[in-house]
Amino acid sequence: MTYTYRFQKVLELKENEKEKSLEDYNRSVAEFENVAEKLFDCLKKKEVLEERTINQLNTGMPVQEIRHFQQFVTNLEKTITHYQRLVLITRNNMNEKQMLLTEKNIEVKKYEKMKEKHFEVHLEHVKASESKLMDDLSIQTYMLRGN
Image (spheres, rainbow, N blue to C red):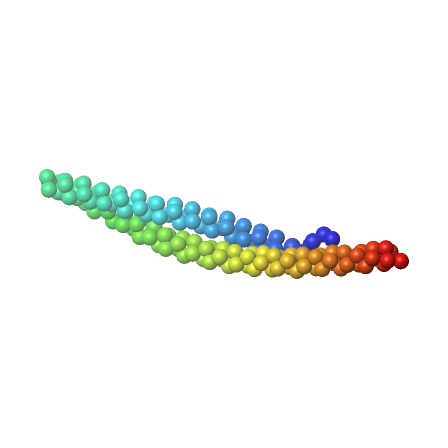
């Protein structure tokens, strides 16, 4: 007697959905890491630039260079603000994908648990059938030998 799980196609569908959610989550993590790395680079660039400018101001710096520095810092701060917003957006996206992946994992686990229970019931039925068959064979053997 072969075993077939009545919700096998549903389980496979849920597993496929879970795999797709995992791919989406991994993409969102990579996107978040990429944006966060760009933000970090901009912040590091600003820090290095400010340190260098402070050193130059202590030793003397032309007014034109100070203006260039201020303009560059202003542009860098705009870029930093942009990347901060992007980091926030990509983090939220990543968290949404993680929640969706968790939901898909839970669904798959439910169907797997149902499959395990269904298989256990199937095994019990097989055991009961085999036991009944053995009892019937014993009775037939006894009847044939007894007569």
